[in-house]
Image (cartoon, rainbow, N blue to C red):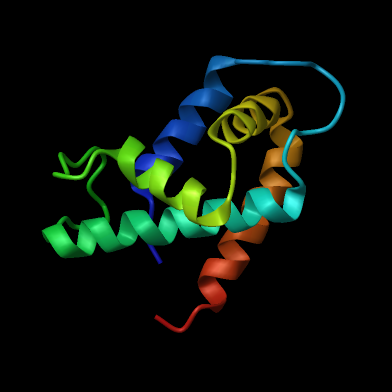
Length: 115
């Protein structure tokens, strides 16, 4: 399933940029909540893509709904603080091996959905 191309691009850019909050410690969000959030973000992006007829392989579509609005809506629906989310993304940018583990969980969850 190809969902959340914009989200994936943002995460890849953060990982590649070397943004790093704290080099050690734990992420601000629990792993399970971070995975749940990413799953919901991917699904929300996919709904926007589908509604606008944007092909899944589009690298940077110009959707009428800004990515930040989609993100903010998903975070609010899950009760996730946007600062905690962004700090968690920055944490995983500094810990790419850990991010791969979390993102594989996201992919497993998305692949298990019967869409």
